[in-house]
Image (cartoon, rainbow, N blue to C red; front, side, top):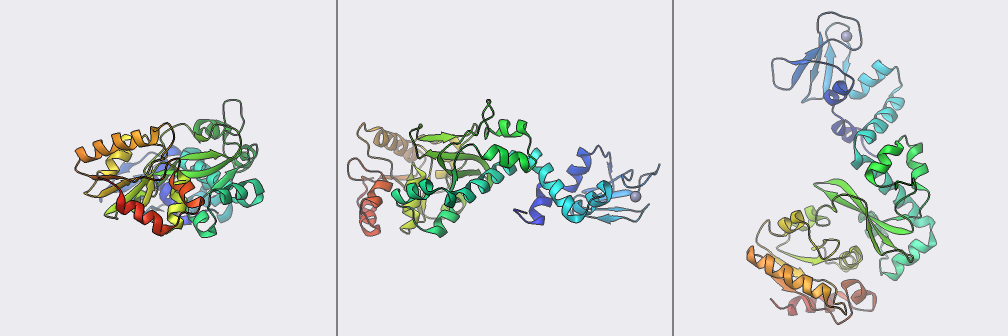
Length: 329
Ligand SMILES: [Zn+2]
C-alpha cells in the first residue's frame, strides 16, 4: 500500500463507487443521505442507506453496514487485503493522478539503482538525500515503467492516455531525471530532464501545473522565481526555501495569477544566457508583474550563469544573498 486507507476512501467515495456499479438511489431526509435497493441481498423495497458525508452504508434489511472496503469485501467476496488491492487498481483506472503517483514512486525507487543518475545529480550539485526525497526526484531509465504499471493492474489505454507510454507502446521518459508537477495538491504531470543526448526538457501532455511547491512558498512576503528545477534544488539546499520554479521562462496564466495573489516582492532569477533570452523573458515578466502591483526585481547573475551553475561553481548562500540585495527594481 503506497498510501493510507483514508486517502483511498477519499479518492473513491463510497457513493461514487456504488453509482459506478449501477446502484440507483434517491436522496432522503438529511443532506447527503441516499436510499436504494440493497446490492447485498434480494429485496423489492429499498432499505440500503448511504451517508455520503460519513462515507458509510447500512442496510436495514440484511443488517450489513460499514465503509467502502467493507462493502467490497461483502459484495465481491474478497478478503480485506484483496479488497484494498482491487480498489487501488480501480481508483488508478479512474484517476490519471493516481497513475502518475505510481509512476513517480517507481522512478524514485530507480534513482539509487542507476549510477548515471546519482552521478548526474552530483554534477548538478544536488547531494542532500533528504532534499532529494522531499523534491521526490526520480530516475526514468526507460523501458521498465510500462511493464511495472501493467503488473500493478493499470491498463495500457490509461498509460497511453497519461502519456507515460507513447503511441508506439514505449516508455515516454527515457534516461531522464524526473520531478513531479502538481496542481492544487494533485499530481498532474512529470517533468524529465535528459541526462543523455536527447532534448533537455520533456513533459507529458497536459498542463505543467502550479508554481513548484507553491503551497509552502506563497506565505513568504518575497519569493525567488527560477526557471529550472535544478536551480530550485540548489537554492533550497542553500536555505532559500522561498524559491519557486515555473519550469521554463514562460509562465502559464495560472502560474502568473499565483504570483499576483497578494502583494509581494518577486526576485526574477532567470538564466543569464548568451543569447539574452532569459533576461528578455525576465524583463517582460517584470513589466507584467508591476502592472499587477507586484514588486519585481531582476537578479543579475554573472554572465553565462544560472542559479544552478552559480552554486555548482562555488557560489555560496552569502554571495547569492548579496545578489538578491543588489537586484535592481
Ligand atoms: Zn441488505
